[in-house]
Image 1 (tube, helix red, strand yellow):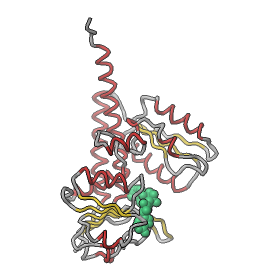
Image 2: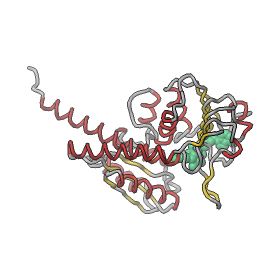
Image 3: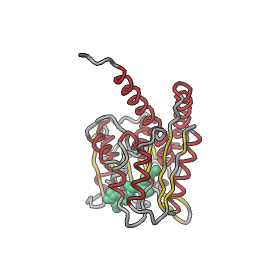
Image 4: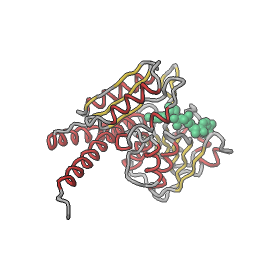
Length: 297
Ligand code: NAD
């Protein structure tokens, strides 16, 4: 029997833990973490994602510091908003919702977000911190996958993990996080020849391509853990990259779509916002501490 992993239940557990930590932080220091979501334009899918994130932020007792810009906003308009949020102490985290309207390049704008407020873990600095194994904020979806594996008691150390998809948002950071946990990691992508031969070697198979139904029984080793990150909207609902029903009795564990990785992404966003707030608190208090130290002659 293949076990279906309940991402919603785990996400709720993390969100509850964040909410209670937020409440005790507020009681201790009066500080309430705040997330600034920045939405540019009127892409309906982005509007839905941002609304969900904002609702989760409020539910966790954090400040919802949303900013909306019109579709015709220029690079300079967006940069000005990001700079203002970066300089505002009440803003613990900044999330620039992607994609941006055509004609505005995302990378230079993402890189204006200070690494300490980069709750999406996407700035060049955050990517470097991850690659250099230094402390920092990690991208939400791959961190959510690691949480799922840990909560299911799946051994990462020494396992052969295959990540299908090599994007900046999911595949690459996913591979880094698995490597840091001592997995043997292979990354496959659209130019991989004989995908099935590669994926059949996986103890842990993480699929993030956006190609519905790409992965079937021919791709999966008996007993492997299959994590389906893919989300594609179809007229009949959301569908993943994995033909889940065909893997029954083959995969050991599998994440469904919907209800697997998706809810974990928002839970990890909340966890990152809390972490950002705590880090900024520590930085501020150590700055004021060092300012209070008498200087030696
Ligand atoms: P992307 O388009 O940026 O990257 C897709 C990757 O898949 C590329 O590296 C490409 O080489 C690879 N790929 C494409 N076709 C392939 C094929 N036939 N064989 C092997 N590799 C192939 O996408 P992304 O931003 O990484 O997102 C991937 C999927 O994950 C999408 O469906 C997206 O909606 C979903 N997603 C879900 C969450 C979540 O919260 N669950 C978060 C982010 C992205």
